[in-house]
Image 1 (cartoon, rainbow, N blue to C red):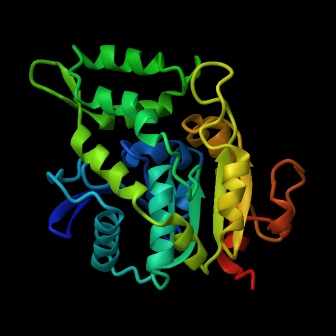
Image 2 (cartoon, helix red, strand yellow):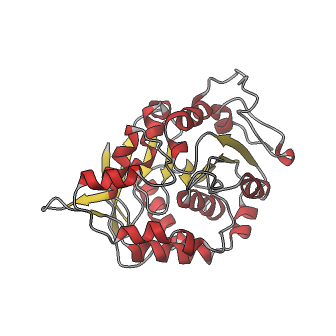
Length: 310
């Protein structure tokens, strides 16, 4: 399952989950790692599909160069991996920052991306993004006394609001290095994350969205992200704005919030989309929620994989 490949002058780590074609490549969030998608794997995304979950440069077990964290740099890493694995074209998906990268690559490399799955990301950067991610960046430089202490601190994060699924523990375990003295330190460097954000803010996302001609599915979680009563990280209106900017965009709401949507009920709902038997109609009327400009729905992810929406 754990694999490494030398691409674009770095060693890239990824998880190769066996399954059926077409391959689905998943890219995690800003400070996240390949185990972000373990909740989807647990409920059957693999073996329904072959899933390649990546540690992007500077995260997880991949190399961490001092610089080189633009969208172009990340895209070159992914293309290098596809070339090495002899995968000419894939379904490309990503969560949060990884969703932005999926948008970027669908626009810039249409021959390599047959369709894209954008998980709780939008092609419009919040003007206060640097301020919003400051708590996440600040924790990266901190040393914690032990793994148990680190895990307990994660359980108390306000966006979890008392929620916990043991499947998420593999994600947090991959997030840190346990040192010889038992102390724990996050693997990602703050400088790399800040560079990635700054360079993403400089991209012309409206232009990227307008260039996308392949089908794009946006999955959006509307649960509170933060203290009780906080708004979702990606409001529905902003998600629909992104969907409507793409010629062949579709929108589906998923239970949970920006983080918990990848586990439990949210993961089950997503995998139902990914692998619901073709030819059958989902009866849950709330399952497929699309904007008025995007009325056409589909019965399954298998249909998403095969139709062109022309």
